[in-house]
Image 1 (cartoon, each protein chain N blue to C red):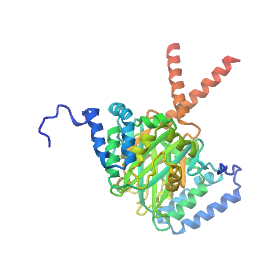
Image 2: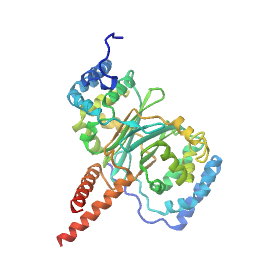
Image 3: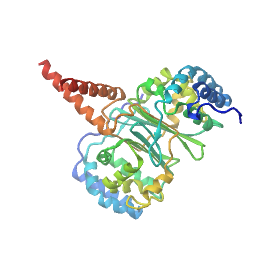
Image 4: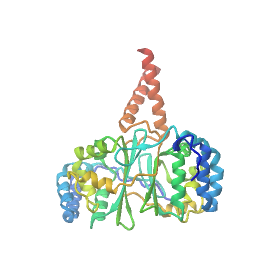
Length: 207
Length: 208
């Protein structure tokens, strides 16, 4: 069992920031001119960022998390015919993924066909911890999972005891992950919407 | 080609027809997929019916949009040394992207290193149309853009007149895009957060 890594939250000292900036300048010494010039211009901004406490966290077994929102990215070859099947299926749904709404922890997800339909990129933003998230999919929408992800080479099937290991093995953790509202889960955002609507109705009634 | 004249336009074809098409597509799928499709079909029928109501649209020049939220995905090779530089800067930033907040239309973004650090995947969810979004970045955080994206081979620089064409050339529109709350922009979410907080404070006062 991996423990949730909690990163240092102490403010970084000026000396440490100085040192980090020096290291960056060294690294960018052989960058394209555009990159070098931008680093010089951006130093003020960087100084602030580097002095702030780190916000990057882990989603558990694998993946990055910021606040309540985690990322999952898998990039793998299609099986023979997989691209054609998946495209047909996605076109049928036309952006209507009620299954994802049923899971209730998916902020967004994309399916991208790469390198002339030879590889599928799946990238999603979801709530909380990796293990719980995957188990939720297994429990709530197993068939939809298999219909979608059987287009990947080697997909073991959602009911296979190996499915979690398979995903973890192929997932690529983002080196950088940013979320605008890291303090809100999907459920909380839906609640906020209801509050916003209620307040509007209330004010209308008063007005 | 069938000779019969279609009575309805293509996108209006019946759900039953569409489902039959997908079934046909999956006829040579692995067994587990075929079985899963049959199990999922009852739910899919109604989803396909709903689909006509909530279709994803174009984000403008490239990419797709659901409601107010669009997707942008770029995969391109790293410049020499680009992976090393980008990794170092991302580690130093440690999740602090105040530049993203400054732009104000960015829901989330990820930087992923592919194929043994030879390719760089950038994927983001943002508000609205492609052109104003890119222009916003160029205006508000040009240096941050160049620091990060000069890791791409051939990045022309955010101030280059060619930068938009470069992005379009390397962007891959998603084939499928789902957003849980397509009607909420980043700004709108911020606003309802403040409203909810005010309501809580108000109720606290009433309760006392």
